[in-house]
Image 1 (cartoon, rainbow, N blue to C red):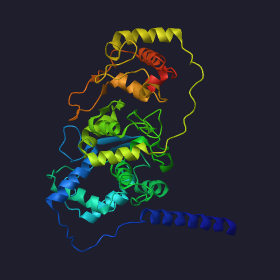
Image 2 (image 1 turned 135 degrees about the vertical axis):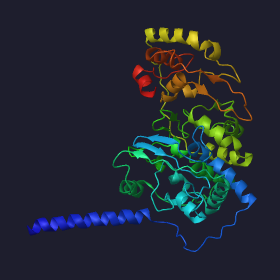
Image 3 (image 1 turned 180 degrees about the vertical axis):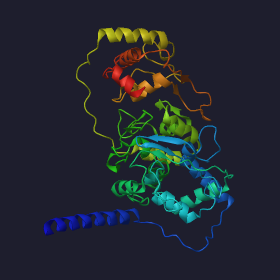
Image 4 (image 1 turned 120 degrees about the vertical axis):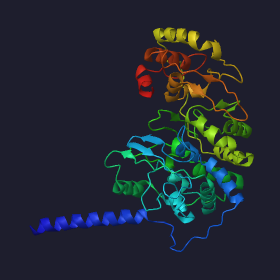
Length: 423
């Protein structure tokens, strides 16, 4: 009995120690909040800068649902663990952040903790925003305080147990969240460092372009290495791969054009990235776009496996079926030989978006359509209609296989299972 008692006491001590460690980790690097009334002086210049930074961070994408009041929240963000609803960040004092002070707002950005002390879910990308400086946080705060108040209560999240509990979130944070600040790399130029800050922190690009584990956490070791966006079924291609979305061999001006206009001589954006350009990057100034381009061009590139030394096998029946679908529905825009139409429709021959390993985006474009963002530099973009009601799974698989194995393209055929998976 004494042995059993000692084991029980040891287990209890271990549990208590783990709880203490989890609590300590969750409060590390926590800004101290003063009980004294805050003296925060906002100015028109600060508000203007905050509005610019809020666009750089693409705040409206999550905090403004379609047809809803600007920044009043309520957008449902589906995750593998349930749905998280974005919060009201207008200046309303009861349902928004009107009663918050700048220190409380910075704590939310830096530590992912609400005004009342609750831990926030990382659908709000504080694992990236933690790098944002206090000065930039204050500017965004000043802007949000200037936004017209909207009295709209926040919707409760609908997450499954145990993900809907604060203790489980505290454990997740202890395992995967490391609060910090952006530290310039003194071996790099000021322009590179500005681009790094915008891409890694304010722009939170790794939230989509980074792979995630089973608990939804990204890994810094796999930064920008590509990943399937949870629930959306779009694949954010690797920015570290010349076969996916790496831009190391692009001219800097072409990277800038892509971020500014959504299209450049080297590529175009669709899906979730089209929304990023539409809502965010097209409004950034040239200096910041250049800085982002410089940083992206210098990302370490992955070692690519060698190209196949002989042609991949082609199923004659699939190629025949896919070719007929292509002739009927695709050739008019993309050309008989996949050459495309410059300035309108992209070439499919030699297109890395066509041949990269993941077929998710190809399926999504055929099923849901492909639309470039409307921007000042490309105000009337061409688009591709959805074929969800026109083609069945076998036809989609066949035409995509045909495209991936024609005109010099050498990529594996697409199965009906892949179409079903990404539809």
